[in-house]
Image (cartoon, rainbow, N blue to C red):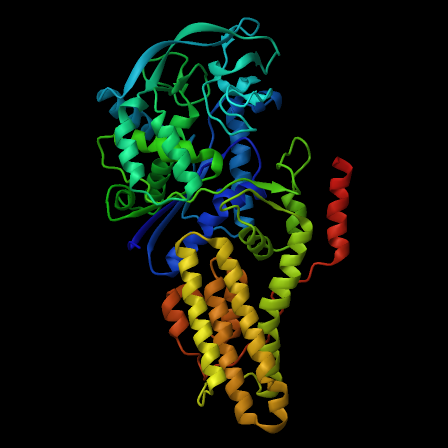
Length: 556
């Protein structure tokens, strides 16, 4: 792994609230990897932001009697609040309505245009006689040209995931009035993706991405054709010299990673600092997206970068996840099929949900959040395995040796085997984080907790306390090493609990003041004292879950 790491998450669209589906798809995996990258000593920049343009924003804002700007202002503030609740560690969370983003988008466009990668083409677009205007894709619905789903959106089918132009729909109609649409000539700028086909295929041939990612990317690259990058709208970044036309949101949004990085550099009073991440080839660029964003980040944006005069960094890793549902259905606020975060955080903790989402991450196939699974993950794993080992050990030490931090001196074969197993697991967990397998990381952390509980049970320190104090101290000293290992390996996923464990072990510095490998090798401070043991996770009672499920029964 390179010493410098750039991490981006797909920009959150400014037309709705953050939910668990978003988190499990592209945000939490990126957050976990960012914490891991920093903890393993890498110079890390973790960037995200709000994608604020597009017809969907104007459509929703109009329904709510708001201006588009007021609409996205609300969702920007809400996003900051909610990401904070989930304990996210963005270096910068930007937005596409900021002036610096407009500058970056126009620069991208002008570079592409000057090299003849952008072409103005007269095309037929969907026009509403009743509304007396061309309609952008989000104002259009019809029959999917691929799977024939009858309620397909104007740019993408929610059933099969196909991406297309709105004028490819069968029987298109206006979402505003329900009236049928006709095709009418208009001029738009098109990105000549077809001119990048060979470059894209060469670029993709070098990637060892997840099969579902690379297969979709190659399919889109093989089918590369000119793609419209402008729309007849008032809300968006105006196309220079063109009245009533703005850049299509798919074109402007990914440039937001670069503009956000510039914002970050200005914020830290180092205006050129962004260049280290975007213009130096030694940087490793990891881009986290959901399944529906694969084409834009594996083909369209790389082509846009290929057409620039500046040597912008291309994506190295694209760990895209599948979809994440809620109790068997897609998250939907309009249908009431969602989890109110104010209510959720009044009862449950950030670490609880971070762990549960990581344990069910849709890395290969779609997965889901269910209340029963959430209860099981918390009670059986976080409380019953992880928290149980830590609490029983620290309470025993507080009672039997007055909270001393014990030092191992005369390890027996059983102790040595335990330490060897701990070391092996911490290495495998590190590899799981490195390869973006957060689901596997959670399984291995629980394996380490189980291993430690077995060691505690087999060595029976409660019996040793009656007949062999020296041996009891030796066993407990090795248990403390296991606890320290659990704090280190769990930090990227459950940072609050990991830091509490670190302090309970008597350390006065912060866990992240040193790196992953050094912390694992670092001896315990025998001059310190174990602080008062505290419960890391609260058990979730059956009646709490039943109340959550009762809410869903009403909707069904």
